[in-house]
Length: 319
Image (cartoon, rainbow, N blue to C red; front, side, top):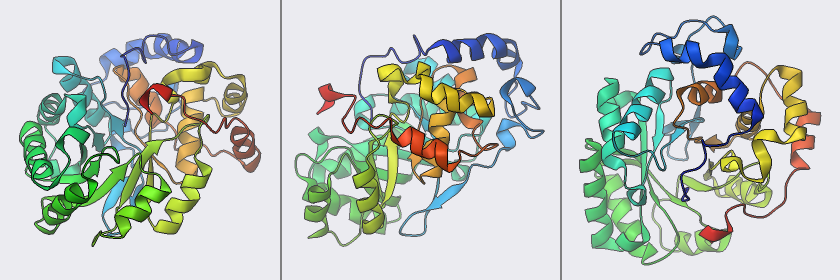
């Protein structure tokens, strides 16, 4: 879940600007599903479209890509093109939400990509204003209509507010009807999960929460493992806040592997077993965010990144 003014790609730091300059010509010429090789991005002989993104197995057996594409602020024709671009590069998990106001654009992007719907993992979320049994069912129908699909792979309660119990009952029924493959939550803390589990007949499959190098959520990660609920990171790059893209610690680690701060951060999520959904309107950034599977952070790297934890949100305005 992300919600803030659209400035993320405006100033992404020295490393990402250098990447754009180096890769702009290649990115502009990359054709749909036919990227070929690129030493510029440190890729191997496989194209990005052919790069296999590992799946995690949710608690109901549903397979979910561990790396996906976030769509907050990607609206209109630009949003549709970004989604189509992301799919052409190999992204299969596409994340949206009612409150983002872009489900139609996301649906248009999926259609534009030409990919079979069953090759994608599409997530949306019910907003607080639509909480409750009847409202959640109506909101779900509106979402799939806008997306141009007849089912969702994952549907989340966006925030633990309003009539959560009624919303969850509606989602359980939709799941049993085959309209949602997995149901989950977002921004829930342990005590709120405990409350939900008192009446839930289906355990949440996912909890999507703020997670990045400066707010590592180690306690939540442990408790979600205990619950058997998959952790998913919104704003996995903190939208560049607190200087993430120019952080000297991350840069020093990246230098060892010829990677930039964003790639180091996404690799860190991957090695923690956390699903991440970085968002960008720049095709070259989308490509670099995929290029994290050809190196491995060692134990020292992981401990060094752990020391960056400030143990507090970088988005206090969303509390």
